[in-house]
Length: 122
Image (cartoon, rainbow, N blue to C red; front, side, top):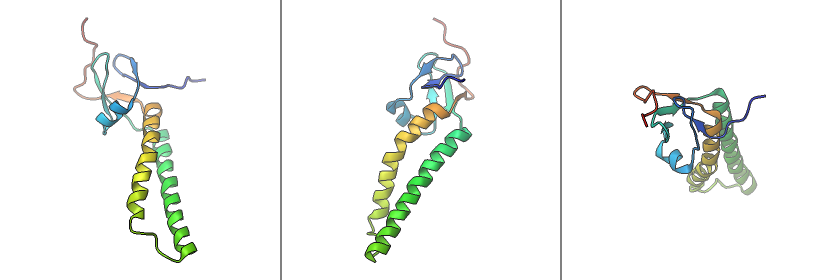
């Protein structure tokens, strides 16, 4: 049985560190610097991550469209013009924690060109 990993593991020095909100927002494209060796790495995509996040986005989109259709059929009026932007903001607010959780557990770090390959000397 494999042990479930929690946090990111530097591919250069094997140090584990958490993907906290500050680190999540400071690296929107998944490039991270190890706090221990200062090596640069990026989050690689995995099939599990794509399926998890893609499924969450698809479920939220289906629920949003379903509510719009329900309003249209039940009340015989189109949803208000503010419905789409508000639904988009709610979707972002709901899906960001899922993306952070999945990124920390389902996306491994891989070294990038120009990253440090050895830990700094003490």
